[in-house]
Image (cartoon, rainbow, N blue to C red; front, top):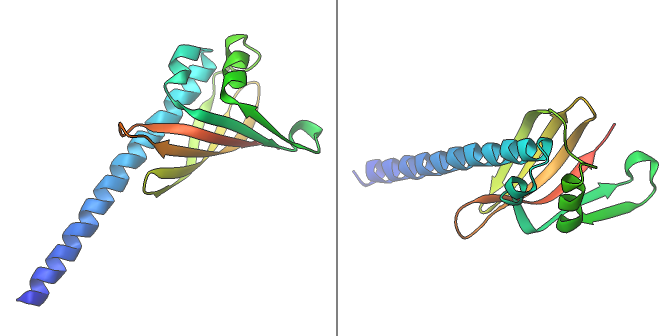
Length: 141
């Protein structure tokens, strides 16, 4: 009898964990898609909803550079506002999401008319339970 209760308890715990991960996966997917759409529409106010205050883009030797460049959130938002970035109609394909507690990593392919690239995106779940992008590392080519 004790073994049956133990097995039932373990199955129940795995079921709850799977449901929580599934729910988080849906929320992360929605966050990434909404982030992309706001960028495509050059909608800075909407875009800010999906970016943590510490958001940054880490560009490792992109476009012929030999350096690692880090773009902070405020510069990125300014480039969206001035339409230097954004203004595309991208398809978003999320290849993989890995969740570890309140942190997640997603490999995302953005297929646009201007540019197609893969990004490794790190998200954090804040105190309100919302997933926010904290880091993006694009890989072009």
